[in-house]
Image (cartoon, rainbow, N blue to C red; front, side, top):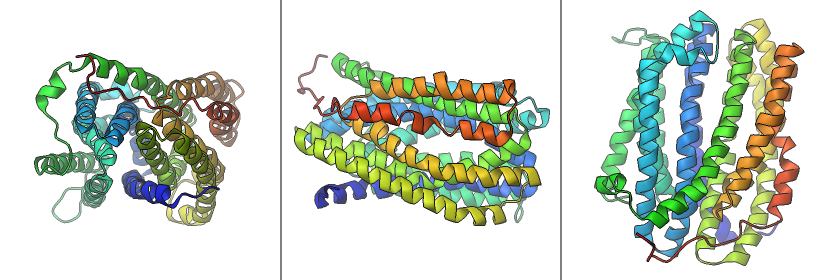
Length: 453
């Protein structure tokens, strides 16, 4: 593996704070599941299903933030900071608009939303209470996530990690206090988990606003958010963001369908799948951090017209992602006995969990490779369309239909269905490799500052 010390030093300076932030965010979901599991399995299952709504929202802001990174990272690397700030304003505008839709829908019709995931009335009622409480958090979370994306571009990744991690610590502490009713606080169960999440979002927002006011990160002028701005810049933003958005919704919708399928196979399947997914997400934090860091590092190179260097560095990153994925899989295998000992589920759910952890250990290898290439390398040079088609076709034309046929037509056992649902990362690897070696992503997409207004 070609090793460029300066490149990897830059990569790790970006990756570690991002990966730590992903890990801390996963810990919130883990603490919800762990603490609610002590109350009853229904609370655990309901929170897992309701948590699919924040996940779907993350697909929207995730696409918008990657769109921000695609363009702003190159302009920032080129030294055109004002244009990068304009991209921030455009990103914030659309993220807040979507956040408002999610806030209103979860506040007004949470039971209707829960019926998408399950027909169990107890899970619907508990999940609806959870969604109604966290509803304001979609607007707040959209604001903070866009700023976290911008901080990573302008070398403030540690600041975003510090704020996000502090919010996570607060969330976990409040989880314990509010779920179980410690001290003079009442025992609130699943509603306590929701309230803890909302308070953490408020704290996160206050800290980001304070950082902006202290000029520790680029400013966001309300007028910029409201104005239409540069037509050329908007056109470029949507050119690269729309494929990302379709990709995110196609991939995330497919992943959400996994929960829908599992949700109709019973509470034991939901609980086991929830725990396995949480563990996988925690360990995958490093993989996702690497993908984000790769996009930023390569985007800066391409913005400076270091095309050949970016091409060689991309190859090094691909090989590196495989090593990280294999190491992550071994960590999951090593953690399996501990997870089975600590998590208390029904005997059937416990049995499912053991094998789902094994599936997670090999799934993460493909996930590490594909997230680095599709989510990092390709977008760095504006190559966002391939990922869209690759994920949408793989999930919606192969894996989801196969999973639904296995579950509802052939009525295969739960573990057989779970196995089919873990094949998506490996189905698309050949197509990803063939597209990678075409090197369409090796290009500078910036324009002169005299863009059309």
